[in-house]
Image (cartoon, rainbow, N blue to C red; front, side, top):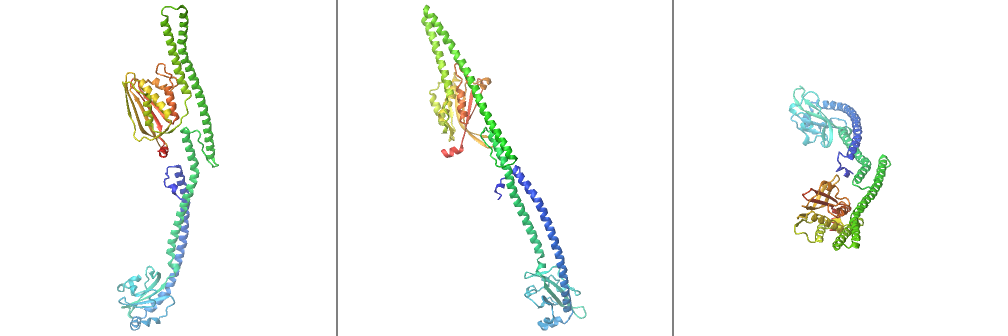
Length: 510
């Protein structure tokens, strides 16, 4: 019933609601129980007073009987001669008679099974003073009823004295069973307290259970909204909060879903605008890059045309220079158009569970021989989890990074490639990544160059198209990873790539 309350925090909204509802139900319950107990206890007290008064009235004839018997000084001597002597005393029905001598020995008991049998015959067991201290004058009543054989008795004792009122001859006791209704009054009080306590606990537990259900009804929709905001913050614009209630929370959920839908449409429109703007920028830069080689091609062709008719001295040299210029610029145009075509028509990502260490090794082999002044160092994490990537596209990205690193060290240096597992703590949980680091000791980059690093057609190399790192970033982004670049001019560059690890896929696929 309360399994859901085991791990519930008192500081959570649900915990607070349950606590408030439980207290609200507990206060009137406690008041009701107390009032009920006081009313019942008052009734029992009155009943007890009445029964005590009735008991006192019942004791009066017992006192008369015990006085009558004790006033006969010959009763002790008669019992010594004949134990049946006491039967002559005509006691009312339900009464018992016990007579002791002056030493405290039981001489007679009219109903040993019901009351004063031998093993409990001592006066102390009956709540009476011993013979040596027994008062000669007046009857004596024990302070409390005597309980024997699961029955309660009212006793009255009186001293039997000599005719000169100086010598104690024995003790006469008359007893009567207390009616069960009177003896059960105390048990009834305890029983009522136990029942009321049980009722109070039951009401509180039921109230706690109902409070848990009510709190769940209130907090579940709110928790769904909280989850929706987290999904939205994480970039999931397709998430819909599904709430079946008809209250204000449903209105809030509908508003949230409408807001999410508008954000999704705005995001799509923004992407479309950004894509259009990016292509316009690419087209402008591409047109500019094409114009640059066209000018020397045109000038070389015009120069050849002019020289061709006059055939001046050194014409062959001019011909070679012009044709070399035309060939170089055409080659430059070809490279530019190839890279642009590659960027514009990148194949779709086809992710599979892949060993990232193997992809890096393939990229290194694919590069071929390195310059003698370049030292390649690598350190791979053992038992690295597999990641969901497109191995061909990722190899292409790593090759591009390695190529750029080598070209950034014309005078030689070191290229270090490391893989490891990285844990990043977020608000929701701890996310695990495979981290790949490419660190070179090359020329590095300025802050201005860093800000334009992934911009299409930005290049730090002469004649470069500026699409290499743009392609690398797109490949990594499309696979759910991220790329960071740390560089300082003259001190080299570190490129860090993180690709998320899927524990479920690793468990299923390996």
